[in-house]
Image 1 (cartoon, rainbow, N blue to C red):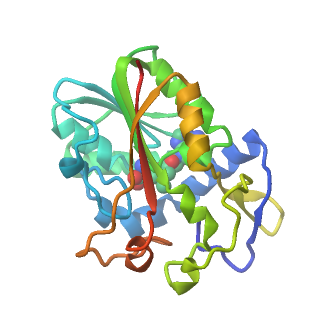
Image 2: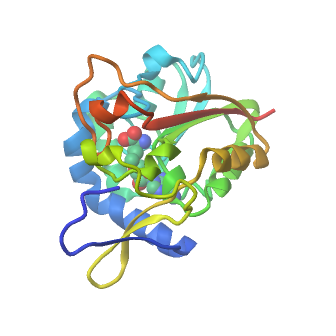
Length: 269
Ligand SMILES: C[S@@+](CC[C@H](N)C(=O)[O-])C[C@H]1O[C@@H](n2cnc3c(N)ncnc32)[C@H](O)[C@@H]1O
């Protein structure tokens, strides 16, 4: 969710697949510079962070051994994660819906000299061959920004080889109960966990400009399993004692009390 301006109306309402796609693309294009300015230093030039809690793949090792693996980063944004994976000896491709975010991926490649192939596409329709990857991952990319996240899981399943793993991190579903506030107001339950309608911001003209879709924990499990995966782990990173930096609604205050990120580890049998 964003810091909505005065002209923005916020609502929990159903939205079509096409309106969701348009809003996501529009939002990530116009917000790309701001997102990188705000979070680029935290994310690093070539580093894979799983979320605002600061959990790094270099210590978490959720992807397993990387040397020689073919890896896909979905919703890669500026692709710092993909570049880190490349430094570990893997062959990586990064995909994202937004040209604005992919522009930052190209700038990141120039800055680091680490080049990974990039493609602009919707995670619900990957222009990639069946069974062509060993691993796929995302840190907060795509999954919450489409109306049909089950379709993303099916696409990722298709492009993974049998035995391949899909590791995706999103906002922890429990966060949807609370206002999007890093302070004390964000500790008071105000919304139903079971309300599946997306959070939508509308411009003055009534056009959806930002959308985030909610699933309960059970919904996520069922979608992953229905795509054919076996779910083997669910990681809820704890907020480390040393970490003081807020990221939007993610703060030390809230992070010490309840999870902000859920990372699902699934295997294609
Ligand atoms: C919160 S950002 C995360 C970016 C990056 N993974 C990171 O950790 O900084 C969400 C990303 O998902 C991308 N995205 C949104 N909808 C998408 C879709 N349908 N297909 C592919 N990428 C999408 C956005 O363009 C954006 O780059």
